[in-house]
Length: 261
DNA sequence: CTCCATGTTTAGAA
DNA sequence: CTTCTAAACATGGA
Image (cartoon, rainbow, N blue to C red; front, side, top):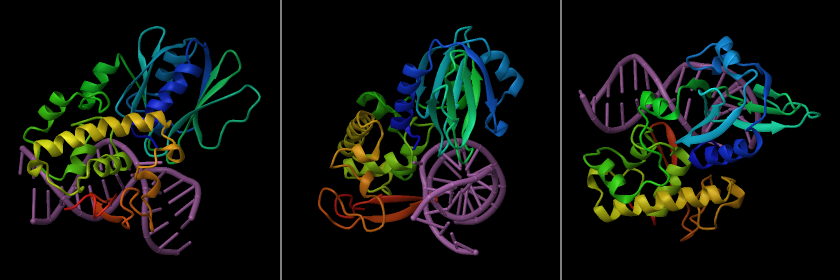
């Protein structure tokens, strides 16, 4: 699930459930998740401290500790934060569980262990070091247009490249191009100003509506592609059977009528 | 058993 | 140098 709307939803969960609570300790079942730090360093930075703020950039979630540094979380393909109570058992696939002194817990669940847990002095430094582009949400048209200047290659991979824009993955890349009426294999250098504008608008609208739906596919607006992007699915706008193709070894779903080549 | 999966990185081909 | 493809990572679900 973790693309920008999912991670924004996670951020709101942490904002409500993880701040200002003293950390008693943690269990780390999958040390491979650590990125650039070891368990001892993580322990030194978390234990007896508390989270005081949250921030999101693209698919990364940050929480600031009371002594300055930020915990940086990436959720891979299957990661998700999940708070649970003092008398509850940890959820399945809890790879990293923070225990608060008040008895509550915060689990980081990740069946496939493709996520990342790290520390950074601040999100700006982190974003710079990773070479991430600006956050896809809230990007204005002049900035978006400037980013696309000189861009080449297929539009879908361009949108999904975190160095251009941060936050769009395979699912929302399809959704944005569907809403914009652009075929995923169209080339950046062939897109008109009007088409780029449609992609920009669709990006803002799609991400905003998805966040409004708490990134829950069952709560997406009726004109969304997401609930239909599977075998036998039809276009929610014109009812044409959906088509799919492999782009960069990922499946892209689109409507062959609303998104002509 | 086989195929597919929301991400990122990397090797190799073109 | 850039673009594109395939695969690897680890694991579960259909």
